[in-house]
Length: 267
Length: 267
Image 1 (cartoon, each protein chain N blue to C red):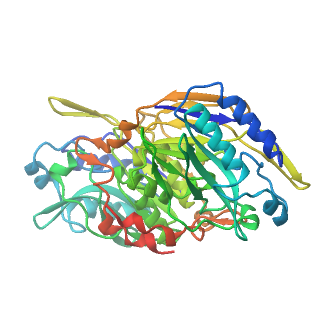
Image 2 (image 1 turned 30 degrees about the horizontal axis):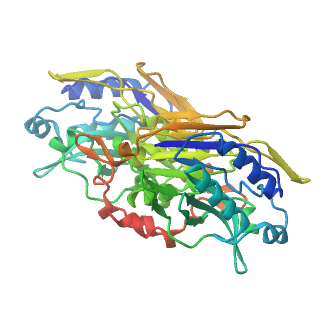
């Protein structure tokens, strides 16, 4: 299975332009699955609630998701992409999964980061896993990384490849995702953006790139640079993520002492 | 608060000798808390159940725990140390905490690694946190690291400093403990051993050293070498572990979506 990441610089508010950049790039490669950054079509740094309302789109019938479906059909691949979703009067920081047969599913970010709490509603759904044929795919978004519960729940549901659209401004996630891969024995695919945004006088955001794919033993299969724009593809064997044995005596799921984990439900 | 790690090479079966090594070293330093490796008094690689039975000791009245209490009293400090515990006809891979006023508590390793499953019974108790005055101390042992549930539960109970006696043979734990520190915003203290054991013809174990202290932001305050024997002490401020805010909008505990975490209890 060929998994790709497109690390690029979305331009704030330029939805058709950002989609065009993705279209152009994806049409040049061979892959089974490509992961795009969080909020790839709108950019990241919203400054008013109205702005989010204007740029957010319904899923799956909105402009962006339909263009992603066309790309998936035309190129015969699956795409995971972050976008702002509108559902009635609620807006979510979401990730959609689309494929050659159309829209597959959506995840609404459950753990909002920083000022996202001003602009978005937190997701209230399950942490979803989708069987796309070559592998079961779990979706999470950016700051979800700091909560080990998210990747754990995805993996317990059978996710072999955890796809994480991201707009990272802190330097910690890439290392932590190696831990997420090891502790769950899954592949992790982190698609971060690069560039900077400076839409508030007092706050310039610089995104940290270093998009990466990690295998179930914690090997970083590739890690892009901090500023480069690139689409990189790597061949993975998702079956490796079915083997949960850390040693011949240790199975990372069967060894869990759920009998002792009651306190995880406490706040 | 001064926290120390003693990284050394226990000699298999030489309990008084290993204790003497620790006594000698601890008497030369100033610290509030010193963490020793897993099974520091016996060595690691048991080859028969009988051997474990002979070397395991009751806690707190056994020889080793009593010597640790004497050291703690004489030097005015707390000690966390791994040892084989016997309780009736059960044996545990345990860590004790002792201090100037005597025995404080014990943790019995819940997640046994590799052939430990042949020699030890798994712990069935809580993941314990003890208030020693300058800080609340959580105990875990070695392979517990791969289960994010353990450090999470310790931190949710208020642990500011997680002490981890270890006998690591794999190279993954040290990086993962940085993630444990970040995700819970706690200090982690990993005391690994060095040297090798070759008590089975087909299996030589080489321990990986690199004992380390990590702060709640994931900074490695020090990391020892892969082979050196050393006692290193670092000054930490445990109050930093009370601040669970990752940003002004994000609190790593309050942001947890326990409403969505039900699947963590599934096997």
